[in-house]
Length: 150
Image 1 (cartoon, rainbow, N blue to C red):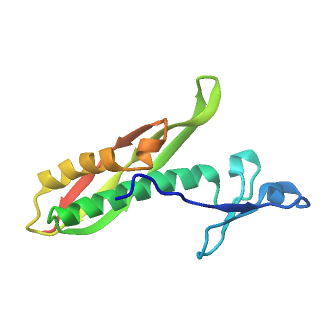
Image 2: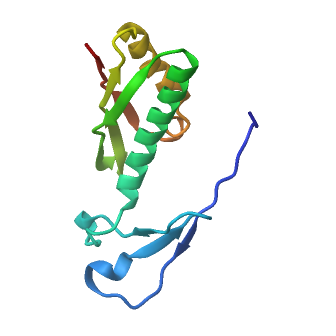
Image 3: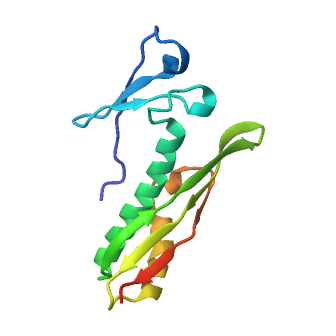
């Protein structure tokens, strides 16, 4: 794998909107559908749009899941389903408003013959290998629920 990769995003905003739409903007990622983004509703943003805080949380959760699934496949672990009910806390810390913690709550369903202890160990390994979690300064806590099909 290469030592570095570059990612690009284009943001477009124009003056003129009022009220909760005043912070609405478009995020363009080459070759994919645009994302309509606004400030979080707590900051008078448009609640019908994505917001940066949720996108950061989704990035951490998605990276954890993708890293886990890759490791599980490589390790021969048969994962049938993966869900996460992730949360992020935005608060003042060190005199600045920031995301102070992320909690991931993956529910991982395995085939009947899968090893649940191996699955649990892979959660920790995936956390160590998750690029996005390794890039944020807040605590990322993982509270997995491993279920084996009967």
